[in-house]
Length: 592
Image (cartoon, rainbow, N blue to C red; front, side, top):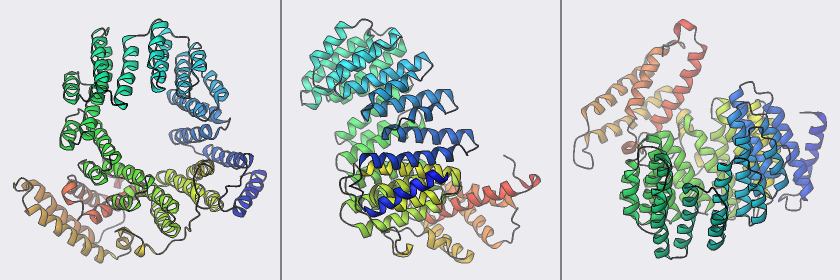
């Protein structure tokens, strides 16, 4: 850090320390503090050698700058090496700038894009944001800047949608009538919004009429892809009108592809909203593409959560077989619960997240949000305890590039809801370029968002020992045991798994013999792993052990409450093996 920037930042920290809640800051002082943080972040990013990592951090920095109204946002986005990614980030920057009331900056951002198609797309984004903000005349002027007739027609349709959202359906229809070149797909976009608007005021008959009109638009589609795109919007309109079965029939009739997947997701969410969760899950599980199905299940869970059924939301997430996806979605549920003030519920959800080293990054952000909620609820001591725990988990993440984003999130939480001076010190203390960059990005975000936080309540961050922290978070206690004690703990966990394996499943059928045998084999390998002397570079037997353990835990749902420590151990060993493999001589490295 330059001496001048260091001195200026020192003055900022003194200012923050003198004002615990920072509510007395002037706008210029906030901007000054943000500018220093952004400068430090950019300096750290420039020291990162890996282009992919550097681009990722430039994206984060550009978005944060745009949200804060910093004029350097577009220049940061332009530094991204991947051309397509660069255009997308410039579009994001323009959108954030319009949302922040920086229309002139957004226009400058669009003009900085040299690809005419991408520039048109950004003008489209700006016009849509203007329309959402009620600046209809400005939106039309922006649309007129678009060169491509196709892009302009799409922008007109999107603008008409903003008129519907503003409650003026007649004006939207006039927009469609007055402008030439609007495609059937553009018409469908507007009619979809109209159907939803009718449904929101309870006029399901009008919503149904609109949906049927959209079917006629679908019949005018010039090709199969356009028809599928329009059908996707018809499904939205039909579910808005309460015609879920008709919507599901249409969705099922579509050819495999993104439109069908999104349409089935829409139907699943509608089924969940109507209270038929079993049917919703069944619909999601029929979606072609594993991760599309997982995304649909997450949407169902969020729908349940919005409707006040937190336990139901968690139950839906627990049907996802992929451990990492399930963990990510539990984090999202916990954060939403914390934001809504359901602190105890959020903690209970976090306790369902695995404690393995590979999953620690999912715990930090969720716990940090819970800490903020506790501070807002007038429980600063509890907030400090939880934040301390979040910090401990994040510090255990290896390798550093996996830890950087989570450190940034914790610094943001400190700056936003606790002690900006300490947040600045944490950022300053980071010595690895990736971590330093993300920490300063988090610091800038936290400073900006602190001004919009209803009641910042500083909470202590030097919490109690982990043993007294809330929840069943005992991974650290486990890893502090010696090898023999660890084996004893894991043996008891596996015995519990074996007991479950011997019991029939919920339909009364015995568990598959192959699954039982894989657990028994893993147990034998586990004993050998802990008891057999081995050289540090003896990788192959360890990999054999890990492969067996991974096969054991491929089907996680039935055993989640008894094998959490086993999973944590597997994650920890994976990291150790990865490092050992990198350090081993070439002849000792396992073949792929």
